[in-house]
Amino acid sequence: MTTVTEPTVHGSRITWATVDTWVVAKRHLLHLVRRPDELLGTLMIPVMAVAMFGFVFGEAFGVAMNVPGDEYREFLLPGLFALTMAFGIGNTTISVAEDVRGGVLDRMRSLPMSPVAVLAGRALADVILAVVELSILLALGTLFGWQAHLGVGAVIAALGLLVLLRMAFSWVGILLGLLVSGPEAAMKYFALVFPLAMVADTIVPTDLMPGWLAVPAEWNPLSSTVIATRELFGNMAAPATSWVGEHALTMAVLWPVAIIAICLPLAMARLRRLGR
Amino acid sequence: MITDEPAIWTQGLRKSYPGRGAALDGIDLAVPAGTVHGLLGPNGAGKTTTVRILATLASFDSGQAWVAGRNVARDRAGVRARIGIAGQYAAVDGILSGRQNLEMFARLHRMRAREARARADELLERFDLVEAAGRPVRGYSGGMRRRLDLAVSLIRSPRVLFLDEPTTGLDPRSRIEVWDAVRELADSGTTVLLTTQYLEEADRLCSRITMVDRGRVVAEGTPAELKSSVGGRDLDEAFLLITEGA
Image (tube, rainbow over all chains, first blue to last red; front, side, top):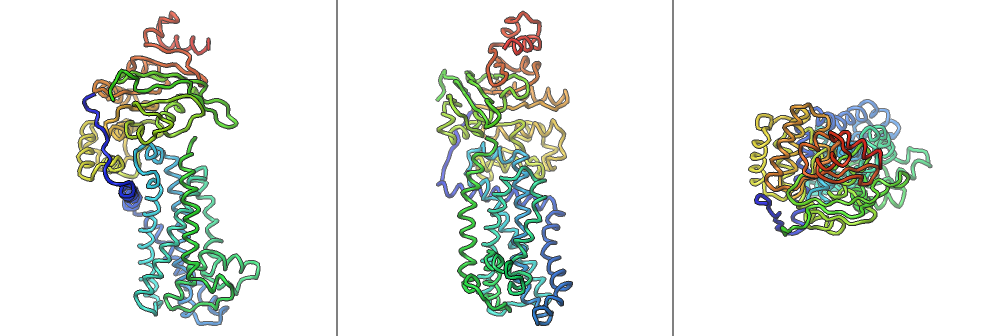
């Protein structure tokens, strides 16, 4: 009984939750560094999206909207920023499902660490990754002639909204990852991201959609963020025709906050009952 | 804190899964501190469920459970600060290196960064993983991986260590390495609860064995007692006789 040490716990609960969250986030970021091919794969989605939607479909969509291709691309870029945030859900879900399967989550649950940090670390890593993705997209957009017209403050506010959206989607992905039967299932459901990302004011303005589709598209949380960021960037936007479109800035904050407020406690409850 | 009270104590532990019936149907355990105790039984006997409950990873329906003087149902944090778990269910990260795993889990055990590094060094040395320390764990052999798993579970020098089938799937040499490590731990005063399907393993390592079958304790005693109780020559025979009679 000589080698047994009493664990010392110092500092407040919140301090420890923060430290633990960072340690877990670092694990996920180290994964990306250790598997650069996966990081490259993740970063390729936004790059490909700019190339495909900007140039392959861009001219045709511009014609449909009665604007030249350049102007369409200015409309498009904020849509692609938000779309990239949505596509992150797939990564998050698969990563969490792998941790459930592999037993790392169980080990963490058996530690005297902050329970919320087990999951919040994933969300923090996602947010950091989102900042990297957005930087690449901004650079790429600038290269193709896109620009923000309203100054640095507005740009930072717009990026803040996008990161907030990513954080909300991260919690959706975490919850889904805890619910699916395994990483294979998570991959199969990946296609569901497409309607979330595209039945929205991202690539095609909602007024060009059939009426029955326009309503869910307008109420899609992505649309609020896209419209709000178009305003903040000073980019061309389709005129708002609905209540939710007119209150885009408010909704771009409310939607993510509401999503986190619902998904975080559900994910925590699910974590507690895991494998019981 | 150190008294004569058992390091692990359960009474009437019951758990059933909806639609699958009783997984545990009244498990009584009393493991004295500083001993290696075997939980022996066939697949599906309830060994893993018992360990998961005691390690706070699963809930139970009724009965009582105490680990290291803490009530498992009421003081999970207290239990978690005093246990280590290794085996099937508590894994290491395959993408990170051995050192990164140890440092991460040490940090999550509330060690400061420098303390965590020092502890990682110590454990890498002790489990003969210095050479492989920088390589991703998924490239490790089965034995190395199990040694790392054991090292991770010992970061905070736990009072009670749960080993869930620690040698399943290992080659004979790796198995002996794990056995040596368990003996060393017991010598230093750690209480070990070990689940296994291998009778030889239980015979060699454990001072006492609890045999479980279909969620119930069917026999309890020292390996010698269990052998003599059925007049068998070895534990294999004893095990077959006891589980058939149950």
